[in-house]
Amino acid sequence: MKVVLKVFLGILTAIGGFVDIGDLVANAVVGARFGLSLAWVVVIGVVGICLFADMSGRVAAVTGRGTFDLVRERLGPRAGLANLVASTFVTFLTLAAEVGGVALALELATSVSYLLFVPLVAFLVWFVIWRMPFEKMEQAFGLAGLALLAFAVALWQLGPDWSELLRQATHPSVPDGEGHPTYLFYAVSLFGAAMTPYEVFFFSSGAVEEGWSRKDLRTERLNVYLGFPLGGLLSLAIAACATLVLLPQGIGVDHLDQVALPVVLSLGKVGLAFLIVGFVAATFGAALETALSTGYSLSQYLGWQWGKRTAPREAARFHAVVLISVVLGAMLILTTLDPVKVTEYSLVFSAVALPLTYLPILVVANDPDYMGESVNGRVVNALASVYLVLLTVVAFAAIPLMIATKAGQ
Amino acid sequence: MRRLLVLVLVAGCVSPSFNDRDYELKAGNTAKAVASSLSTAILGADAARRHKAGEPYLSVLIGNAEKDALAVQSTFDGVQPPNAAADRLKGTVDDLLASATTGLSQMRIACRRGHLDRLPALADGLRSTLDELRFLAEHFQ
Image (cartoon, rainbow over all chains, first blue to last red; front, top):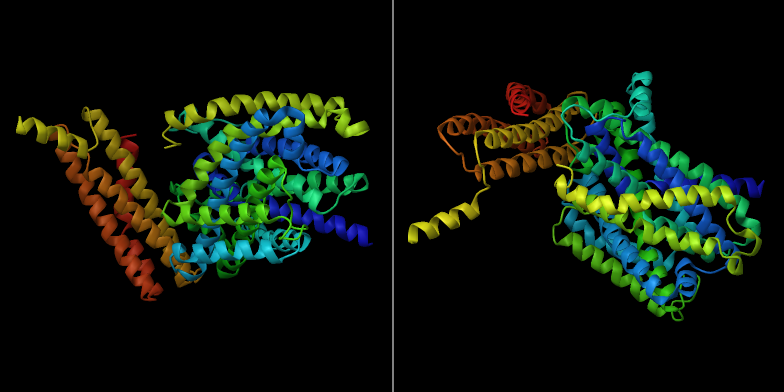
């Protein structure tokens, strides 16, 4: 019974933890502009993140070591450094966006400028990382993030023509008045949102923090292969709500308040209350994960002591990196850069960094010296190779598409 | 020489608009962006009419819609109309933008004073402006 409960809790946490500010913004923007014609990107992104999260979780469970530790050892410091720089930059931008996202959610509840909340949010992120046990932290914010299911309830309440939504999702086409480059730019952003690099680093380092071993692999697989796809369905519900309410009115999404509008119109104040709890939990949880991820990646690469389970005195440099990242992220948002814009750019840069993040994981997961009998099977390798080609194409296309479309205008 | 310098400086302060068509496209995009802000605020007023949202949320929603509309208006003001026909188009768009931003401002003030019951009437007053902006946006797509 205890095992079943643990698995169930893990799946719920994975669903709630799947959506972050990038998913919220990207899905609402795309739904309001293209309907569900980009739903296929979410599906491809979810399959990709499941594939690589499972791989990195397996590597962590079998070796008991963090991703960057192995990447540097296996590929050498130079290749590891390229991986480190690219993913740390993207993770830092994402952290800033998440801190801004929490502040924006609090602004919706109070109408007090989000900028006033940023220092408080930054302090709380650091404080929770410092004081709260890892497992409790992950579960608390993952479960509270389930409040975002308000999107799914609102979608049902809006009484959509399901066959029309299904038609849009299964017959992708560029809507009238939109160009192919813009359509592809948003496809890249949505893909970047689903496959954000920090998710994999956090997942694998978290596995080490929680002391996973081979016997935990079944639980890990259930979390990944049930939790993430259900989180992907939640992303599609966000896009569908925007499709039904915002698209017919010609509303372009530029703010978090517009993301909430379909739920408000459908479920009223109760729905909004749930949504704000969900926004805060999802973005705060992701802020914790990104802050920890910067500490994990740098510490693992440089061979420092790391992890929340290690006493802060013994992992002082790890905690210093986390603290500095949070402070710098908050400072970036306090420059009055729009957090939603920071999110949109972080998704594009995330797409650029994808091959650098996922190729080393694939290499390590195929090395019998590390993995023994748990190396990737043929099917996983074939699928992962297809994804690597796709990730490379996306990475090369991201910046030219951003320039050509003026970031999707 | 001084005139040339002024010309260069002024050219640096405004967005280039090379011909009629280019200006019309800019006018169309401006109308589309402000129509988006107006639609957002009108949906917010609809939520207020049905008691589905409170003051804090609506205040943020309408405040952001107003800010966006003002930013678009300011950008359009900076675009140099290339000829007399463009001057006439500018006049039409300017009038619509002024009506939109004034209406949004009134909605924001009413909202922050807690007069949510006034929002539907104010929103109704903006519907004709919204229709004209949508017409312009479609016409100059």
